[in-house]
Amino acid sequence: MTIVGSIVEGNSKYLIMRERKGADLELGELVVIDDEKRKYICMVYNIEYGVLLEQGRLYTSAGTIIEKTNPKLEFPNDDLRIFRKIYLKPLIEIHNGKYRSPISIPKLFSNVRRVEKEDLSFIKEPDTKVFLGKIRSGGRILDFDYYMNGEEMISHHTIIAAQTGRGKSNLVKVMLWEIMNHGKFGILLLDIHNEYFGIGNNKGLKDHPNADRYLLYYSKTPPPGHKKLKVSLTTIDPEDLFGIIELTEAQREAISVYRRQYKEEWIKELMCKDLSNIAQSTLRSLRRKIGNLFRIRISDSGEPYCEDEIFNFEKIGEKTIFDIANALENGKIVIIDGSSIPDETGLVIMSAIMREVFRRYENYKDQGILKDKLQIGVVLEEAPRILGELYDKNIFGRIAREGRKFKIGLIAVTQMASVIPDEILANIGTKIIMGNEMKKERLKLIENSPQDLSDYDYIIAGLEKGESIVSSIFTKFPVPIYTPLFDDIAKSEKEKSEIVVF
Image (cartoon, rainbow, N blue to C red; front, side):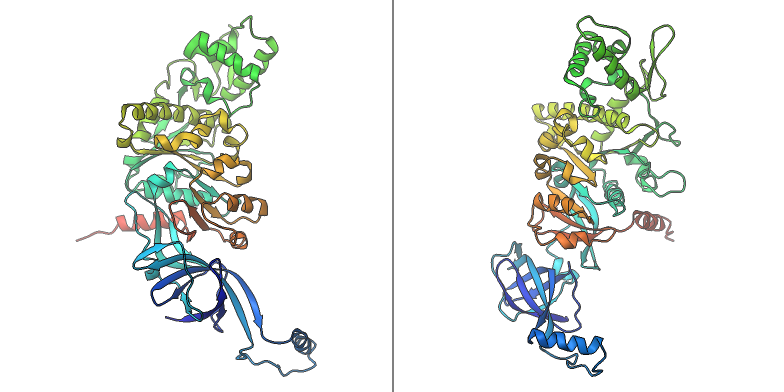
């Protein structure tokens, strides 16, 4: 056990320690204070110079050194008048084997040491676990895997926020890999860049040992064993468009009229049949929007048809939405390849699926059997767009508001948390905050986090790729973690499976 400093000042909000020379603590590092009856785990959030000398003397001495007027240093390295002051934020107090938020402070001159793996033994591994990474102390990665209770985490929603290139997608892949170990959650994902499944030699969820059991992949060009993406437009509801494409009030009313009159054939009839009570200007604009969304064209005979092979007006793919909802109920991860279709098109398909899931889970709740159903989550990589100003118009906004009552949750992935309304941000139970140099984004997340992150501003700004702070209503303190590369996890799993036991 190496002592790194001693407590010399502070209060219930922060502590100040004098650092031992050569300890070289850094921002974000975790330290431990062993008191007689209590143990405190604290985080370094600020570092200052401490000098017990008159300031003018310091400036004069610095001048003699840089101007080389006096080659002899006035202050030796072991001078006790010059040191570093380390500001500590108390995170956890452990007393009689129980941990809680600090309600006392350690004794003056208490010794401070670096945290070790054993100090975190109070963090237990949950049953329905989701691996997020290894606990980190500053730049030091501890040999301590950090899991969260997946059911709590997903049902109360999660946001993963960072600038581009900080490891958001890698973290989602690592989480899904762990979920596939036990199949206790159904997860829906629109793979915009086709990076999650793993095409060709690229590592992906297809390489998981349980992929045959827990993974479904829908694509225009699926590999053997997976599904061709086909959707009948008879299974698309007006609600699936709301909040995804911009619609005027007149256009929304027109859609409702066609839906009431023509039932599941409403899109087909809207594209080719005029109604006297709807203005031609409204119809022209609406047909252009819906036509572009589903790539609908009108034949020489006046019949609408879909130019894109995904959609059709016939019965081909009429069970796709139903089948995916079934797969989610059965604990599968369903990936929709969105790389070859417009983002809006993919979101409409996602909306139709989650609408069906929500309908079912509402019924299960009414029947009193919801508790027996698996938790379902949906990953939104277009979070600001879907949960922005129009969030109350679509199924995803409804999930954000009511989903936890029906065991349906969101995993929102975003660069721009500031675009998401406070009402939604405040209701997201777990925030995984990765590196972000934009102060506006950091402050938005800090203000809406379950724990007090007011001292974490510069720490968040300095997070490296793969590093993050996990702030959750289910944790007693903000947990610093490092998420390993997905490829390394997949490679390690493959090597384990190739070991031959004689």
